[in-house]
Image 1 (cartoon, rainbow, N blue to C red):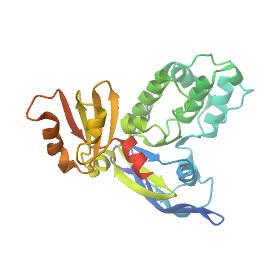
Image 2 (cartoon, rainbow, N blue to C red):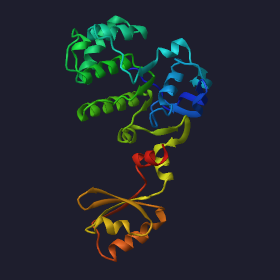
Image 3 (cartoon, rainbow, N blue to C red):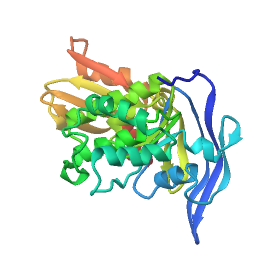
Image 4 (cartoon, rainbow, N blue to C red):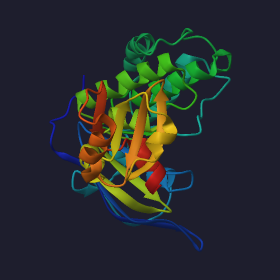
Length: 302
C-alpha cells in the first residue's frame, strides 16, 4: 500500500479565477488540501464546483496558481491524481478487465499489477459481475463502481470525486463512504462535491461553499458550524407546534418526528430563556442546543 507522511501540504489553490466569455465562473478562490484530509466543495448547480476540478486537472485555462507540494503540477504529477467525473465515461463495448486496464495503463500502471489488484477491488466494492463481463451488461450502480475502481486502483495521492454518491442506494453509499475513509487513512488528499450535506458532514475535515463563483465559506467544518452559534434547539414536548412557533426569538419550527421538534432561534443567547419557557422548572426529557447542521447552513448561505 502506497502511503504518505501526514501533515505535508499537498495541494494549494491561490486566487483561482475563471471566465467563459463575459461570464465570471470563479472569482479569487483559495483553499488548501493537506494529505490525509478531505475537503468538501459544495454549492448549488452552476456555483463553480466542476470548473474548480477542471482547473486543477488542467482541462481548462485559468488565472491564479495551483501548487502541488509547493510546485506547479507537471505531467508526472497528473499520473498521481485519481478523478471521478460527474459524467461517467466508461466504454460500453469493453469488458470490465479491458476498461480498467485501458485507464490504469494511462496512469503508467503495468498490466500485470492491474490484473493482480483488480479482483481485490471488485471484492472490496462488492461489484456484481465478473472481469469478462461487458460494461454494457452491468447495472448503473455497478458501472459506477467500475468507474471508481479506475479512479483509485493506481493509488493516487490526490483524489477528486465529482458527485460520487449520485444514484447509489444506501448500502452502496456506505461502501463508498468506507472506501473514501480508507483512502484518507492511506494518506491521500481528497476533494469531493456532493449535494447531500449528510455525506459531506460525515466525511469532510473542511469545506468550501461556492456561491456564484465566490468562496463564501471556507474553513474547518467544526469551526464553520460553531461560527453560526448554537441556534438549533431539539426539544421533546407535548406542546402543539403552533405554540412553539409563538415562543420568543424562535424563527421556525420543524417536526423531526412525533413529539420531537427542531427550533431555529435568532441567537444562541436566547437558549436559557426558551428552556425556562418550555419547562417552567419542570423535568423535560429532551432539550439540546446545538450549532446548525451543514444542511441548515447550505440553505441559508448557498
